[in-house]
Length: 359
Ligand code: PMP
Image (cartoon, rainbow, N blue to C red; front, top):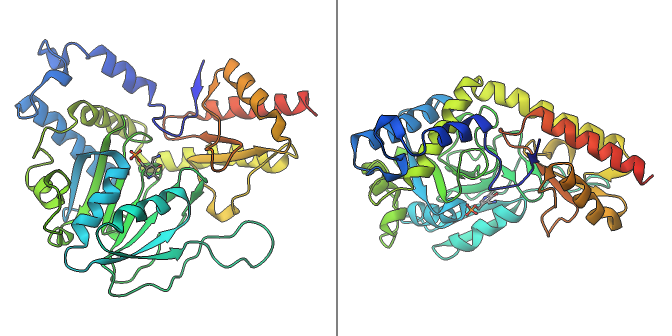
């Protein structure tokens, strides 16, 4: 048994992979692969529309939001959202909590003026800082951008920031579909697909309709939300296979009980690993307890000289891709929806065995 803890592209539900394999060469008895269907064919349009409907059902997306299936992954949206939202008012506030919220800024600065806000509260004592819940926001900003889950640092919001009348834009790449959220609190939600949705390259955008009238004139057509909404994300040839696979994942999520069930499962997985790490002197996690991610769990070995041995032994036991991001170092276990609790238990058992071997 292999458990893949990759941060993305990440493991997908095995049932989804098996279904894709079973119908790979002969989709719906058409004698061809879904990959070979024209995006204009009624067979493919049905696949695309069903995927959108299932995502709407799962996330309870209201009718005044458009759902787009676009190319260019998460980073493509760093640029697209700035082009689409800064046409009337070229300034925005960006809350920074780590690597990905920081990376989004560089694209927005090509389009308008960005104000950078520290996402962490002032330190009140020694130790990791908590997330801030109040900022000095600009009421005239076109939007406020933040990242709900920092994939690299393992920092996740357990609340939705209140930005008043200024539209809230969220990068949910590494946490979308992992627990229920209230879509109505957001102007726009986007996510690269390769963690909780499907194959990389695809991005899902959920955008409130009233925000579709403020694009910069130079917005490239394939990034233009209004044009994409009008053409059902088929202005150009969409990433048809990735969209189909996303649809299989959405069906799987529905069968598994939807986002309520996912939330419970993900909470239990995270608690299992954090509680083991906290009780150990051999491992540590230095994220504030209120900001710990359910999806990406970094941990350090107290004796860093054991890192390579840890990774090699873990891999030999079928626990893959545990190396932490180079910025943070140490280890990172990404435990997206497709990771069963058995995988987290196997990791904890291995960590305990390794710690005892090197005590
Ligand atoms: N945002 C977040 C939170 C991410 O984790 C990632 C990728 N790891 C990105 C954006 C960028 O996504 P992509 O590589 O698809 O452009």
